[in-house]
Image 1 (tube, rainbow, N blue to C red):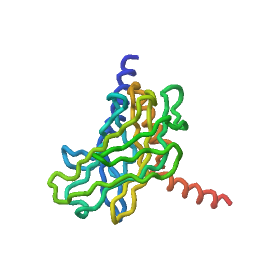
Image 2 (cartoon, rainbow, N blue to C red):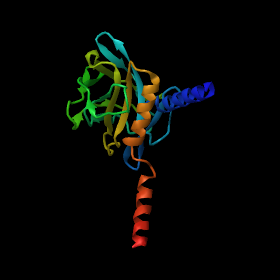
Image 3 (cartoon, rainbow, N blue to C red):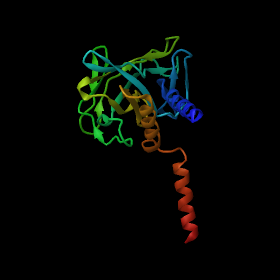
Length: 222
Protein backbone atom coordinates (compact mmCIF):
# COMPACT_ATOMS: atom_id res chain seq x y z
CA UNK A 1 0.00 0.00 0.00
CA UNK A 2 2.76 2.44 0.92
CA UNK A 3 4.50 1.76 -2.39
CA UNK A 4 1.27 2.55 -4.24
CA UNK A 5 0.93 5.87 -2.41
CA UNK A 6 4.55 6.77 -3.13
CA UNK A 7 4.18 5.91 -6.82
CA UNK A 8 0.95 7.94 -7.07
CA UNK A 9 2.61 10.92 -5.42
CA UNK A 10 5.55 10.64 -7.79
CA UNK A 11 3.21 10.51 -10.78
CA UNK A 12 1.42 13.67 -9.63
CA UNK A 13 4.73 15.46 -9.16
CA UNK A 14 5.71 14.40 -12.67
CA UNK A 15 2.52 15.81 -14.14
CA UNK A 16 3.09 19.12 -12.37
CA UNK A 17 6.71 19.49 -13.40
CA UNK A 18 5.82 18.67 -17.00
CA UNK A 19 3.57 21.74 -17.17
CA UNK A 20 5.39 24.19 -14.92
CA UNK A 21 7.56 26.46 -17.00
CA UNK A 22 7.28 29.63 -19.01
CA UNK A 23 5.17 30.00 -22.09
CA UNK A 24 7.82 29.34 -24.72
CA UNK A 25 6.98 30.96 -28.06
CA UNK A 26 8.39 29.89 -31.42
CA UNK A 27 7.37 30.49 -35.03
CA UNK A 28 6.58 27.45 -37.17
CA UNK A 29 5.25 27.77 -40.72
CA UNK A 30 4.27 31.38 -40.09
CA UNK A 31 2.31 30.68 -36.90
CA UNK A 32 3.02 31.22 -33.21
CA UNK A 33 3.45 27.85 -31.47
CA UNK A 34 3.84 27.29 -27.73
CA UNK A 35 6.20 25.04 -25.80
CA UNK A 36 7.78 24.90 -22.36
CA UNK A 37 10.24 27.76 -21.94
CA UNK A 38 13.21 27.69 -19.57
CA UNK A 39 14.90 31.06 -19.25
CA UNK A 40 17.72 29.58 -17.15
CA UNK A 41 18.86 27.21 -19.90
CA UNK A 42 17.48 29.59 -22.57
CA UNK A 43 15.76 26.81 -24.49
CA UNK A 44 12.21 25.84 -25.39
CA UNK A 45 11.18 22.20 -25.20
CA UNK A 46 7.94 20.24 -25.67
CA UNK A 47 6.98 22.26 -28.73
CA UNK A 48 3.23 22.03 -29.16
CA UNK A 49 2.44 22.01 -25.42
CA UNK A 50 -0.73 23.99 -24.76
CA UNK A 51 -1.47 23.32 -21.08
CA UNK A 52 0.48 25.12 -18.37
CA UNK A 53 0.31 25.16 -14.58
CA UNK A 54 1.00 27.67 -11.84
CA UNK A 55 0.51 28.23 -8.12
CA UNK A 56 -1.18 31.32 -6.70
CA UNK A 57 -0.63 32.73 -3.22
CA UNK A 58 -2.57 35.25 -1.18
CA UNK A 59 -0.95 38.68 -1.28
CA UNK A 60 -3.03 41.32 0.44
CA UNK A 61 -6.54 41.18 -0.99
CA UNK A 62 -5.60 39.17 -4.09
CA UNK A 63 -4.57 35.74 -5.20
CA UNK A 64 -1.31 36.40 -7.03
CA UNK A 65 1.09 34.67 -9.43
CA UNK A 66 3.85 35.90 -11.72
CA UNK A 67 4.27 32.56 -13.46
CA UNK A 68 4.17 31.38 -16.17
CA UNK A 69 6.38 34.00 -17.75
CA UNK A 70 6.93 34.37 -21.49
CA UNK A 71 10.22 33.18 -22.98
CA UNK A 72 11.45 33.59 -26.57
CA UNK A 73 14.92 32.52 -27.63
CA UNK A 74 17.40 35.22 -28.61
CA UNK A 75 17.22 36.27 -32.25
CA UNK A 76 14.38 33.91 -33.10
CA UNK A 77 11.93 36.63 -34.18
CA UNK A 78 12.20 39.97 -35.97
CA UNK A 79 13.32 42.87 -33.80
CA UNK A 80 10.67 45.06 -32.16
CA UNK A 81 7.66 42.90 -33.03
CA UNK A 82 4.82 43.12 -30.52
CA UNK A 83 4.28 39.99 -28.45
CA UNK A 84 0.73 39.99 -27.17
CA UNK A 85 -2.30 37.91 -26.34
CA UNK A 86 -6.08 37.67 -26.57
CA UNK A 87 -8.19 36.39 -23.68
CA UNK A 88 -10.62 33.94 -25.26
CA UNK A 89 -13.05 32.97 -22.51
CA UNK A 90 -14.39 33.79 -19.08
CA UNK A 91 -12.23 32.53 -16.22
CA UNK A 92 -13.46 29.12 -15.10
CA UNK A 93 -13.41 27.77 -11.53
CA UNK A 94 -13.59 24.34 -9.92
CA UNK A 95 -13.85 24.17 -6.13
CA UNK A 96 -11.88 20.94 -5.97
CA UNK A 97 -14.72 18.70 -4.80
CA UNK A 98 -16.16 15.77 -6.72
CA UNK A 99 -15.24 15.19 -10.34
CA UNK A 100 -13.26 17.88 -12.15
CA UNK A 101 -15.73 20.38 -13.60
CA UNK A 102 -14.94 23.73 -15.19
CA UNK A 103 -18.49 24.63 -16.19
CA UNK A 104 -18.72 27.34 -13.51
CA UNK A 105 -17.56 30.87 -14.31
CA UNK A 106 -15.44 32.50 -11.62
CA UNK A 107 -17.34 35.18 -9.67
CA UNK A 108 -14.31 37.45 -10.11
CA UNK A 109 -12.29 38.27 -13.21
CA UNK A 110 -8.58 37.58 -13.49
CA UNK A 111 -6.43 40.58 -14.39
CA UNK A 112 -3.12 40.33 -16.21
CA UNK A 113 -0.79 43.26 -15.56
CA UNK A 114 2.58 44.42 -16.89
CA UNK A 115 3.61 47.80 -15.56
CA UNK A 116 0.84 50.21 -16.51
CA UNK A 117 -0.71 47.73 -18.97
CA UNK A 118 -3.59 45.48 -17.98
CA UNK A 119 -6.39 43.31 -19.32
CA UNK A 120 -9.08 41.33 -17.52
CA UNK A 121 -11.18 38.31 -18.40
CA UNK A 122 -14.82 38.97 -19.18
CA UNK A 123 -17.65 37.32 -17.26
CA UNK A 124 -18.97 35.79 -20.49
CA UNK A 125 -17.06 33.92 -23.19
CA UNK A 126 -15.63 35.97 -26.03
CA UNK A 127 -12.40 37.61 -27.12
CA UNK A 128 -10.90 40.37 -24.99
CA UNK A 129 -7.88 42.13 -26.46
CA UNK A 130 -4.80 42.04 -24.27
CA UNK A 131 -1.64 44.11 -24.70
CA UNK A 132 1.76 43.71 -26.35
CA UNK A 133 5.38 43.89 -25.21
CA UNK A 134 8.11 44.62 -27.75
CA UNK A 135 10.60 41.84 -28.48
CA UNK A 136 14.27 42.85 -28.46
CA UNK A 137 16.06 40.50 -30.86
CA UNK A 138 19.45 41.83 -29.73
CA UNK A 139 19.09 40.70 -26.12
CA UNK A 140 21.68 37.92 -25.60
CA UNK A 141 19.48 36.15 -23.05
CA UNK A 142 16.30 36.21 -25.10
CA UNK A 143 12.89 37.58 -24.20
CA UNK A 144 11.92 36.79 -20.60
CA UNK A 145 8.99 38.81 -19.31
CA UNK A 146 6.44 38.10 -16.59
CA UNK A 147 2.89 39.30 -16.25
CA UNK A 148 1.24 39.60 -12.84
CA UNK A 149 -1.86 37.42 -12.58
CA UNK A 150 -4.31 38.90 -10.07
CA UNK A 151 -7.60 37.53 -8.77
CA UNK A 152 -9.67 39.09 -6.00
CA UNK A 153 -9.45 36.90 -2.90
CA UNK A 154 -13.24 37.04 -2.57
CA UNK A 155 -13.39 34.49 -5.39
CA UNK A 156 -12.22 31.90 -2.85
CA UNK A 157 -9.76 29.04 -2.95
CA UNK A 158 -10.09 26.84 -6.02
CA UNK A 159 -8.62 25.74 -9.31
CA UNK A 160 -8.90 28.44 -11.97
CA UNK A 161 -8.67 27.92 -15.72
CA UNK A 162 -7.47 30.73 -18.00
CA UNK A 163 -7.79 30.43 -21.78
CA UNK A 164 -5.91 32.69 -24.19
CA UNK A 165 -3.97 32.74 -27.44
CA UNK A 166 -0.70 34.48 -28.22
CA UNK A 167 -0.16 37.05 -30.94
CA UNK A 168 3.06 38.20 -32.61
CA UNK A 169 2.99 40.98 -35.20
CA UNK A 170 3.22 39.60 -38.73
CA UNK A 171 2.42 35.98 -37.83
CA UNK A 172 -0.71 33.88 -37.36
CA UNK A 173 -1.96 33.65 -33.78
CA UNK A 174 -1.25 30.58 -31.69
CA UNK A 175 -3.86 27.96 -30.99
CA UNK A 176 -5.70 28.22 -27.67
CA UNK A 177 -3.56 27.82 -24.57
CA UNK A 178 -4.85 26.90 -21.10
CA UNK A 179 -3.27 27.69 -17.75
CA UNK A 180 -4.42 25.80 -14.65
CA UNK A 181 -3.92 27.91 -11.52
CA UNK A 182 -4.03 26.43 -8.04
CA UNK A 183 -5.29 28.93 -5.47
CA UNK A 184 -4.92 27.34 -2.06
CA UNK A 185 -5.92 23.73 -2.72
CA UNK A 186 -4.09 20.42 -2.40
CA UNK A 187 -1.59 19.69 -5.16
CA UNK A 188 -3.28 16.38 -5.93
CA UNK A 189 -6.42 18.30 -6.85
CA UNK A 190 -4.34 20.59 -9.05
CA UNK A 191 -2.84 17.58 -10.82
CA UNK A 192 -6.26 16.08 -11.46
CA UNK A 193 -7.37 19.35 -13.05
CA UNK A 194 -4.29 19.51 -15.27
CA UNK A 195 -4.87 15.99 -16.54
CA UNK A 196 -8.54 16.78 -17.15
CA UNK A 197 -7.68 19.84 -19.24
CA UNK A 198 -5.12 17.85 -21.22
CA UNK A 199 -7.74 15.20 -21.95
CA UNK A 200 -10.90 17.25 -22.46
CA UNK A 201 -9.82 20.64 -23.80
CA UNK A 202 -6.82 19.83 -25.98
CA UNK A 203 -7.40 17.73 -29.11
CA UNK A 204 -5.31 14.58 -29.10
CA UNK A 205 -2.54 14.66 -31.75
CA UNK A 206 -3.86 11.34 -33.08
CA UNK A 207 -7.53 12.29 -33.03
CA UNK A 208 -7.60 13.46 -36.65
CA UNK A 209 -5.79 10.33 -37.83
CA UNK A 210 -8.16 8.08 -35.91
CA UNK A 211 -11.13 9.99 -37.28
CA UNK A 212 -9.97 9.52 -40.86
CA UNK A 213 -9.22 5.85 -40.22
CA UNK A 214 -12.70 5.35 -38.81
CA UNK A 215 -14.29 7.10 -41.77
CA UNK A 216 -12.36 4.94 -44.24
CA UNK A 217 -13.32 1.79 -42.34
CA UNK A 218 -16.97 2.81 -42.43
CA UNK A 219 -16.76 3.39 -46.16
CA UNK A 220 -15.18 -0.03 -46.67
CA UNK A 221 -18.00 -1.67 -44.71
CA UNK A 222 -20.49 -0.12 -47.10
